[in-house]
Image 1 (cartoon, helix red, strand yellow):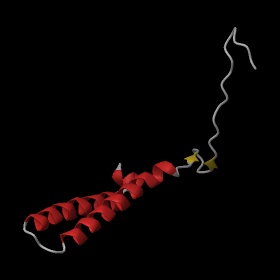
Image 2 (cartoon, helix red, strand yellow; image 1 turned 90 degrees about the vertical axis):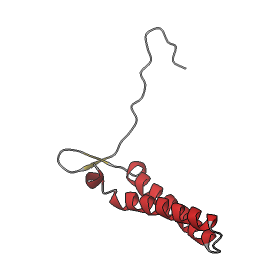
Image 3 (tube, helix red, strand yellow; image 1 turned 45 degrees about the horizontal axis):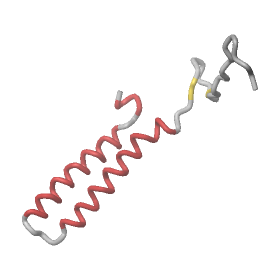
Image 4 (spheres, one colour; image 1 turned 135 degrees about the vertical axis):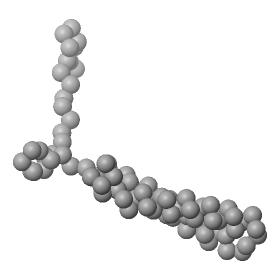
Length: 86
C-alpha cells in the first residue's frame, strides 16, 4: 500500500523525526546545549512527514477505468414521502 500511494517519503520523514526526538531527549538529559535545535528539527520532520502523508488524501482525483479524470460532485438528497419541500 505504501508503494502504491508513494508515501515512502512521508514515512521516512516521520521515522527520522522520531529518531531526532529520541536524540533530543537524550541530549537534554545529559545537559548538552544544542538539544533545542535537534528538538526543532524533529518537530519540522514530523510536521512535513504528516503533510506528505495527507497530501494524496486531500488532493485526490477520481480516475475512471479508461484513465480519464472524473470530477466528483455530491448527489442531491431526494425528499422522502410525506416530507414538505421548502
